[in-house]
Image 1 (tube, rainbow, N blue to C red):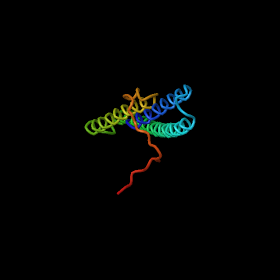
Image 2 (image 1 turned 30 degrees about the vertical axis):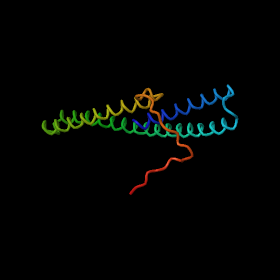
Image 3 (image 1 turned 45 degrees about the vertical axis):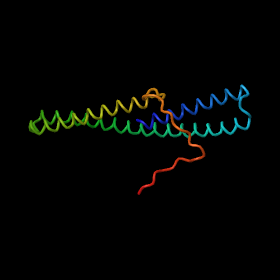
Image 4 (image 1 turned 180 degrees about the vertical axis):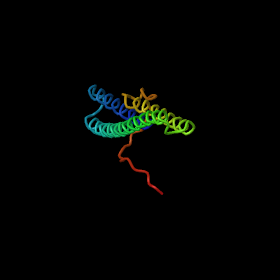
Length: 148
């Protein structure tokens, strides 16, 4: 998920900027006023990145729970279908179609659960394909896209 990769990249970038700024400040290469202003800017960027990351991870957790629940229901449906066939409730043609449909949906859900689990296990942008250099949003609050 690109949004997650961007959120990690923003966090990593702000962490690096703050670390470098602190290093320069300790070496005396940055005056106190510059240091305070830039530290506040980078800290705000970091807080926003962490909030974005947390929101995305919560969304992924919710999607994972829904997918796992649906997968469990699909597996139960497959088991029920086998019993319905054995007791003679369903014809072989009808049961074959239902079974194929259920298996395809189950496989799709299993793939989705694996991908969501992988995304949630990510600890950095590297786990998702690498760092994306994202710009700082100076003096601007994130805006929502307007509907037309």
